[in-house]
Length: 290
Length: 290
Image (cartoon, each protein chain N blue to C red):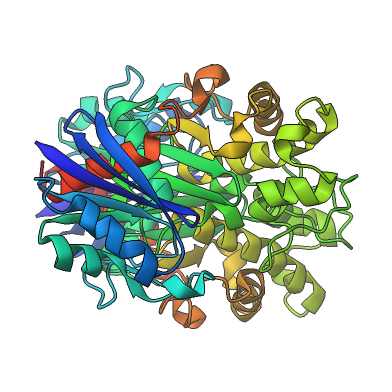
């Protein structure tokens, strides 16, 4: 069986065809400009591909409530051309097949839970740390939506005493995204993250905020694993620093077999940056009831 | 049908008999000292009561994983007489009926979701703020356990700039419990919370920390409602202060119908402090598969 996958990001839209094993058979990418420009080539791509369903993992905020009149819409995004755009409706109208829909980050988590490093787990968290910070959450074997969906990037941070940076988030200043996303790195240190690789103080501070976010998730969600993806996390020197700081924050308060082995508990995304598009395949499979 | 309920707290154990409507027909209370002293009168109480099952909501940490060899145990509690005590086993051996088991705070949340202010919701959070701070979480209609269970009292706080108090938590100092539980109030202000009712600065600071915890839960869990119980929350003047500060932290970032009406979103526990024992009745009903 073939499935369509649409990973709808703020910069580009990745379209792919895959099979029930998560194998990607072909893919294209279209720049995200306006719905009028971006959507027609996407819909054209999927036509005649003999796919049973399509899964969309989309930048947000999005309406995930199937009983809402605006289910399947991108809602209050600052990318104004896409605000209140019914992306699920557009795809369903054009293709006439079942459509699975979730946030971009829940899609990536679903990829990891289905085919990657979190395979078989029921409770996990996926952070993407790149141009923004977002997070996907699975609890009791289901992707978490709740009232809306998690917004992990906007949790408050305890600012390190020697850190005078005011933060990059227009809403909260020094929330997680405001302190730790790529633009914050660049503004704070005057260079791109990839050009700061040998500056220890950069990654020590970066790991201070990421570790806090992980400890918060442990206290609130008690996940079985925490997965870190996104461009910033390609700086692999972050991982040992983050694990060390999570252990300090925990201070022996919790004892579980998972937390005894932080190398296996806090891990990089495992699917070569295909976790998002593979998650879309699984969303499509779920939309078929498979 | 009759059900047994055991709300196992660190100070006292409440035992009750109730029906399938959550109505409590009778109850007794036994001081929590040691298992040798405390358990025999409890087990005696339930014998011959013709109950179909019993639900236990227990202080923790507890092992909630049914496939674990220590399922049903109180584990690493600082109340050393109860550490590694198999409370579910003791009750099951004595009574020979199905036993439901969860944390004390998940029990209270279950009471509110079944018969109280969160009736019918699938995603909700319950905080108890008293001698300690704990929290229960429901996601997708199920109580959240994950790797262990949430430990909401130990999330980190951003300390208010003018606040020099070091915090009361032996593990984390100024986590939520360290800054906002009853003993922190007493140590910081030199009096019990109930004797500080007219000191505005006390509740302004207290609400600063509680609001942070709620905002964190919104970003991580996206609950449909947040319920606040426990002794400290009997100070009803806290509620408007908390709502105001949550709105400030949110700063119009999220728009949902629930968040437009914070008076209905952040609410006091609604079952006259019977939410815990009523939750135990529901745990018992669930243990029967009802």
